[in-house]
Amino acid sequence: MTMSPLEIVGVTLNVTGVWLTARRNMWCWPVGIAGVLVYGYLFWQWRLYGDMSLQVLYVALQAYGWHRWRAAGTAEAGGGLVPVLGDRHSLIVEIAVTGVLSMVLAWLMTVWTDDAMPRMDAVLTCFSLLAAYWAARRYIQNWTLWISVDAVYSALFLYLMRH
Image (cartoon, one colour):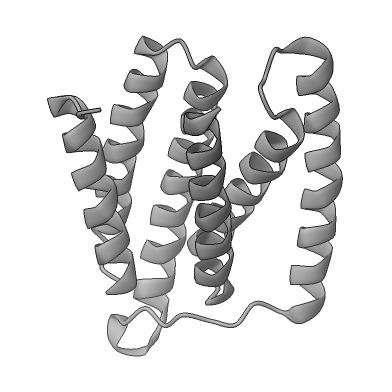
């Protein structure tokens, strides 16, 4: 299966956005927004409206992150962005709330859609949003969450491709 030119653009933008994020470069946000918009359009073309809707939320989180990083960059000594450890109590609460939201979304997707794997899809959707929120807040833990979510997404996509 080959990728379309637009898919290649989307992948390139998203990989570049991650690379810029790792370097704490403010350009990660506009590049990330562009990548999300490309994927939103692709999901619309593929009639994957849930994934398309998720991209709308990602645009909002990207804008939020851009705003937060700009404010932090001007407030910190020397203008440098410093990643921070999220407060343990807050992280636990946010994970618990995300778990509950995952259960609600899973129920909604089970009742209202023909999603192939509504529970897994709901969990990955909700925890992806949490990872994006943590990235916007500059929490170092966002990397662990993103890697975990993406590893499970990869396994899910491989499973779905074979079945």
